[in-house]
Length: 252
Image (cartoon, rainbow, N blue to C red; front, side):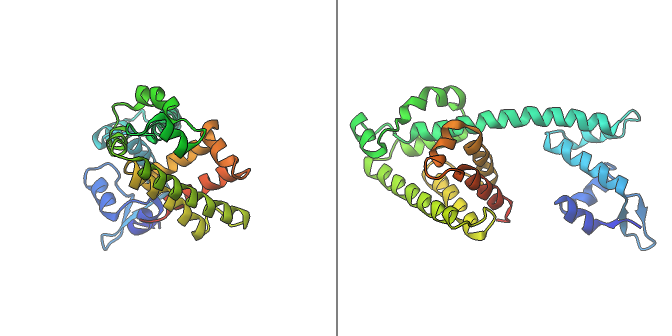
């Protein structure tokens, strides 16, 4: 007979209200209505919903999506191929964005209040200023960069030491779980991942779980950041990235 509106909403992770709206505007009308007026969705309807959600994720307004999908020449395979190309482009842009944000984080760790001597004392061999030009070039006009710069310019040497101590404590707990063979999707691993996210949120800029998942991918993809975790334990970067991804999938 087909799937109920509640079942489709659950499968697609959208609200029943959204599906009602799509029906009302003619974007996605279910193939079957029972005598009682209940909507039932066929496999073809669900495939169309998938297309709608893909287009919506890519930034298309609902009116434009309806125009494209109701065109007699609409070809699902062609649409999927186009969406794949657009998603590849978007993924590449996000990767650069994440790389730039991470570079900005590292750049502003020193803050404008620290002298070179203080910076060396707090961060050791790591010199955050080496990333400043790259970070400002890529992210100087972004909200995250501005928020981070606004916060950190007021930090004292003692503030930076507290942040460093908290980050290192988080790293110790991470290594303990890794050494114990705890899976990345274990609640304990996800808790450590969320703790790392909240460090960013508290000290630098607002960091949602979705944004943290993007950062987690960069921790593996970018050799500079991967090395920070691999020097603690071989394989830790991937483990931590997977823990972040698992944590981001949890409900808030």
